[in-house]
Length: 372
Image 1 (cartoon, rainbow, N blue to C red):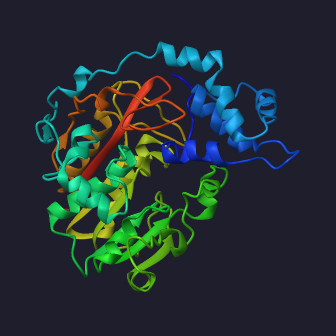
Image 2 (image 1 turned 120 degrees about the vertical axis):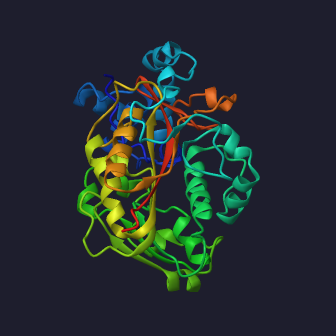
């Protein structure tokens, strides 16, 4: 397996943004953490040794480092070795477990289920309307935008976009969903990891980790007074959900649980998150989905890519416990942008990305808690 260890919640807009804008102080070396991040991002591997990190740290700024790595023979060889992506046969197969609801047809936001991010969903009128409500450019073809839109579309289908609904968000960073829910009059508890849980991982240096309400207020979405009235914040370790977080109508996370340490821990989190919602309540989570293999994958303390087999194992567990996961649609899209695989430095369209030897996209998972 290729070495590719990075926190991929940041790998889309955040990664390229940091590499463009961060500057080293005059006469000082670039931060070690940022250099290691760049090596992982561009070359798909860990640093060979401390000498490699030290040499690259002497670049005058991160923009120079980005240009240098993009022009290396190693990056060129990685790019030229990649073949055009085509849908693998394992996505088309029926489930070996007849209890697992599986489908394979173009997904939609108008009638969402558990599904993959695809180009056609960006063309739907509902996508435009939700983006406008989130103060996001609808023309921004990016899977992170899709994750937010899919979560809202699923809540729309479930009839949960209304005042008084209690919502719990995990790993919220600076995402716009708490502000949007507050504007609707929902009662929102937004959470992110305690500082000690992310020590050494770089989240606090990318602007993607929330420590309070300030990072969550989006003035283009909701006024501050209304926001403060409806949103509260707490630190929560997703690997150890406090027992007092109960009674919510729904909970959500956007591309978080792949960073919890392993595939097992990520799947455990989805199951454990059901304890936070009422009987019949809804949990909505997006994560990384392996489009290359149903056998090999990447699993590391900082990142796990979930295979179809992992999702089906999760579904089997949930169904056995009496919950009702929404049917899972493995249709990966057949449009021109669906065949495009983005490489660093990332740009748009950004629906599928190359992570070492694996292609990944976003998947949304919706589960209704057992009624009793």
